[in-house]
Image 1: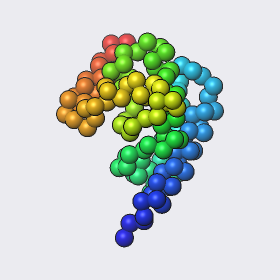
Image 2: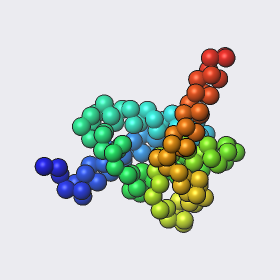
Image 3: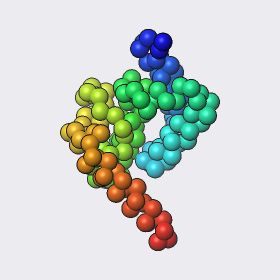
Image 4: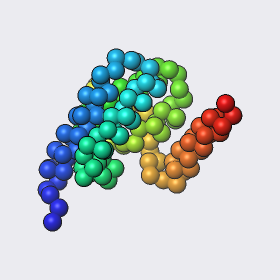
Length: 138
């Protein structure tokens, strides 16, 4: 029998708070540094909590802790003048956002309308493959 939804949400929130704290340790406002620090935070958390980590990929992460971390990354990416569609593809979340608390996420919400579609998958796959090609040509 699975734990109640509220318990799963609380466990997700607790491990996401660890990731957010690690990302906040870096005072950088450069999108790539924020993304790297956040990715490393997720990796470290996955090793510390291997039984909880799957919750983060199987449940929508719409808590204030999760969305605040996305807002910080999305804001930095938009300030770096990255194309909005590229920025919208970066975070994997599609909740209804509070426009006052998360203005960057609200601005990108229409570009996330195809979340989970084949079109979105192919667009993101193209981005990954382009990055690999870029690295190969260095």
